[in-house]
Amino acid sequence: MNLSWKRYLLWFAQEHVDFRFAEITSIIQLLNIPIKWVEEPTPEDPYWIVQLPSEEAAHLIASRSVSLRCCLELWGRAKDIPTLHESLKKYPFDEMSKYFQSDISFKIHVETFCKHFTQKEKVQKIETFSYLPLKGTVQLIDPDVCLHYIEYYGLNPNDIPEKPLDVFFGRWICDSARYLISKISLKTRKFIGNTSMDAQLSLIMANQACCKPGDICLDPFVGSGSLLVAAAQFGAYVIGTDIDYMMLHARTRPSRITQKKREINEGILLNMKQYHLEHLYLDVLVADFSLPLWRSEFQIDSIITDPPYGIRESTEKIGIEKDNYELTEEHLQNHVPSKVDYGLSQIYHDLLSFSAEHLKLNGRLVCWFPVYRDDYSPEILPENSCLQLIANSEQILNKYTSRRLLTYEKVKEFDKNHLDVMKEIPDFRQKYFAHGDETRKERKAKRAELREIGRLESLKRSNNQSDNR
Ligand SMILES: C[S@@+](CC[C@H](N)C(=O)[O-])C[C@H]1O[C@@H](n2cnc3c(N)ncnc32)[C@H](O)[C@@H]1O
Image 1 (spheres, rainbow, N blue to C red):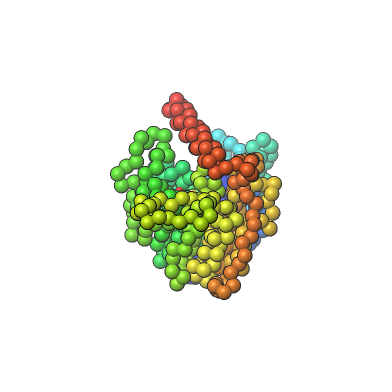
Image 2 (image 1 turned 120 degrees about the vertical axis):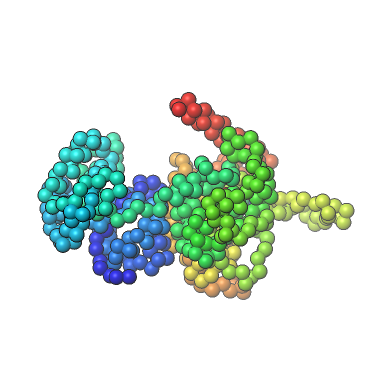
């Protein structure tokens, strides 16, 4: 890499803001890109100003990130418009002038954040840059050089200041990998389930897991395989397990309101084929995660997963509540094992213990963890002595609940003679259903009710959409 440090503006999408830092720091660690902060980033503003060693470094970061929108080589930056023009005039002319040649077409793009301007007003803003000695022709579609002028009016649409809070001018370098969000969108995916993870969050997870070509990535609660699609999109070989035979074989009721029955080959492999990723699909297996399945030598690069919380899907494992139950010979052949509750403390204890044993050193576990917001403190998070928590981002679901995306890195070799004890974590599910003494049957009925409400809301939404068309 040819090192020539310059200032760059990383311009972010204002969506899943709390995940930005964890995503970008994972990408720069994965790609081994040094980065210097020009300004300490604030958690909520949609821009970072950084120094990077080369333009290629900016391209590499953008090629993976879905939190980022685009990257500019920053020529001018100020807190008000007159100072921006002064700062732009001070930018080394030699650096800019190579883009001002007569054979280089250009365009100046104006973006205003949190305030609307008419096209005429935007043209007036462009004219304020007339001192730039641009000699080429203006070309609005696919120009050789695109210069961006951004006015930032803060984040509060109910209190928009008269003048911008921040202004930026620079040369567009590249867009990010956000095109992947529509490429693998659930709207057009062939096989989805009720709890399929949306494309953007799946891609963020695969980035935080540092998935890369040649890796093996596992989802032990794979469901409809959304996370496998994202990991494979970044080149990892993927494998999954789930206790639900009907889900893995796509025999469950279709989740789309418009779909009456499942397609013949519907399933995770069909999704992989849809995105031309089938060469990275190892397999999926019907298996109960609470029971050992893998040989201890089986080592993987990353685990990305969304364990069941018991709200829209059951949290069960194979077992029986009766004492000393013995299966008779005659029932053995057609026996369908019964299930018992799989508590959250046990699920997360198993998940972290499994990761400690089967991840390679420095491999990552990226998993969701449900919380009651009032109960939250970092002390309640699952722990394991071989794993270090390196990122913890919150997605708020409603006033009371949220889920946190936890990223752990394996920092110590697993020792089977030194097993961690299970940590009791607050039972999200019991609190969600409000009554701790509810039976499994009652909870099952409540879940069915919740799913039905979901279906009706979805039907209502699709009716409204067709009315609006
Ligand atoms: C939240 S869903 C995962 C959804 C998945 N990320 C997707 O995009 O479709 C949790 C999954 O865990 C599975 N599950 C529940 N208990 C399990 C167990 N004991 N062993 C393995 N899988 C289990 C459920 O069948 C369900 O598919």
